Image (cartoon, rainbow, N blue to C red):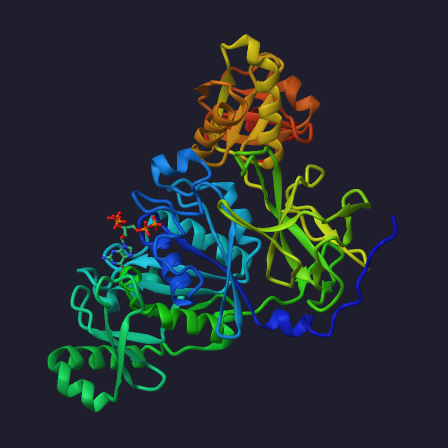
Length: 528
Ligand code: G4P
């Protein structure tokens, strides 16, 4: 097969520059699904509100492929929603919405160029937001903050700014400022122009907000005390130097802040405009070799998500690839960097929940779903033309462990196959233990929710009902064969083999136990 390498099209740099690829990070219930709908609605892609997320009685296309998501009203999978707004192509990557911390979410954040941190005005920073923000900080992802639910009683706007600065050390730079306390939202002052935009929910709420522009003088007359309060707050902000600074934002040191209410579409237009104006477009990504692949080079991308059985009518495995450089053309033959083998992309699709469209081309920042890509693994690089390899995706030490077994002996083959599949997708890590044997592999996860997802999928997709017995370990450390021998003598410690790569992991109930063992065996090789 000859390598089909289209020369970089001249328009690639331009296409890349009009892309915005981001994810919304938030705590469950802060309004992520509502905001996703509102953004898409505003951009007039999905004509009807409710078409995005399958929650409650809202029918959706995003996440209803898995019954469990509907039952629990959570989004367990991740996909990308693409829509155009003005001359920009927006790629909104869906992060799993459950309260548990999961590796899935981290991987999605490797594929974005910025994030929108959505806060509930009444709750401020919540645990899941903090964890997700920490990943953004580590990866240097610029964050735009949207204070949501300003249509109902909440915290004081200045107190929220203080919380952001004190708790996560991110300097808030409000671009808009609300007139009227939470629950009495009148509209926002644009801090850069000083003008006021009056905002009102349109009747029924399922449309764009009604907006009216006013000068400061007109607004002062109309809103009296509310206006005075807002302008006094703005003076205080000015004194603390909360002005937007592009360098600080792009360095993930400061965050532009907007106020609104997604459910009423208030502030949604402003958020879209700020994404267009300030969020970074895809840029050259670092490679393993230490160089950078320019966005207008030949095609390259990496797998940040693998999902099996998304289509109930026929089993398949989809590898989601974020395009980093070049123009992707369906049918092109690319190289799989890990094996050096050619990979054909005849079945490239754009997938959001159950909705799929065949895509013919994609540009940096876009996400493509490669169907039946069983030879692709998490983090794998694909390229055309000059060889490139992107860094492996970060992996996180598991903190939860459970023995998985089935009493249905007739289903054992399916049990094994299912477990291999889930391991390959990275839904859970699978460990084997000499003591427990092949019939009882051990699931290891960063968050316990991963167990539920795995058990559910084994039953739904492989027809195997499993039992999970949680093990009393909280910490895993890499060791070697000599370490395994030493640890055999210790109680409450087990050494297991990671199925994926054969690594030996020593499991401890807590770090004190690990430390006490380390102090007794200085020769022990442990890497936590
Ligand atoms: P999530 O994806 O982050 O978990 O949150 P989701 O959008 O499902 O929103 C959680 C709840 O918050 C929903 O109410 C939603 O309507 C509400 N909500 C979202 N944005 C706003 C807002 O700007 N203002 C107000 N007042 N509420 C908002 P629910 O009662 O759980 O569901 P529903 O019956 O309203 O759909």
